[in-house]
Length: 200
Length: 200
Image 1 (spheres, rainbow over the protein chains, first blue to last red):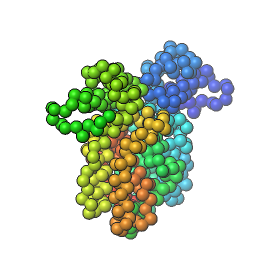
Image 2: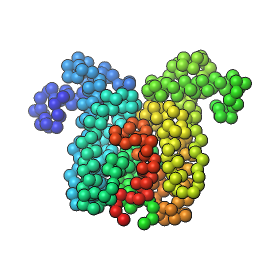
Image 3: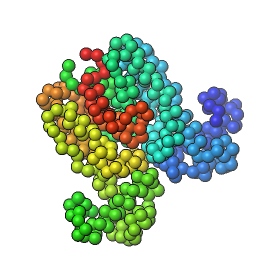
Image 4: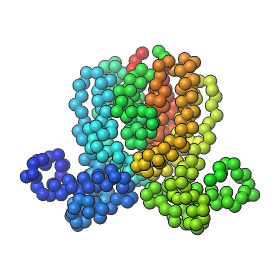
């Protein structure tokens, strides 16, 4: 699939790009409405997009390939980072976990694809490939903090990423803790982790 | 549904209890095999349990009620806590997030029910009711730590719970970070959070 963002946004875009966009958007709409991957069908996507099934099959070999491309479009470019304080850059990156900076359908869609990810190593890897560039930006900020002394020299970078991202993702996806506000969590989680929970 | 754990385990149990157990177990088996809630049917459950659909409908008004009771059985009693160190008690409780101390089907089942939870306030509340007793044990250990000085006096208890549980749950459910080992995470996450990531 050609990258949609490379296409001009004006009405003059080639019709084939507009058709691609409509098919991808129909796929995401159906997932966001609660259709699970099991139930999602090329027929339903074609109907929602206003195209024939053959039009979809000319572009994608099947549901898996279309789903992969559709999910890849959910990850918009990340925020510009000030690059001054590691704390502030982490908050900026974590504020993108969930709706801000993503397609607004993302938090509705993630639960719908989880069963799918957990059942197949190929789907798991495809999703890892999609999220890895975003995750890598967090990794680089943590490494910068270790290098410049803002973070502990012996920090476990991968573990720290999991502890930063996991709670915010769980809150975005299923509002795991009824009393927490996902919008406030990036700053709260970073500050809690910076300070630690034991007295110093 | 009568609590299954109240029934004697010997072959002398009433047949009705054994039928209840078979129906609940069939429901959990189907979910663990990747059946989503959308696709799960009373017909499939009856077939797997070796009973008629009418037998299920005499016991539960429908799929939602059966699902709620089936999920409630996944939460086994938590571990005994030593009650000496807050760190050790937290690790013991967090080691129960996932398979140990749960029905081994739990990590396979959770992704299958997430889309379902995220679509309905009633289902969300039902699941909160199921997990709240377990979550409350973590809350009490944290409060003890604040009271006895093992933890910071100004600790945000709800936030800390989210930060402790979220990463481990994400790892159990979808192995979110390919390089982390979920079995080691309870101790790793507690120690990271106790120390904080900034130098002191």
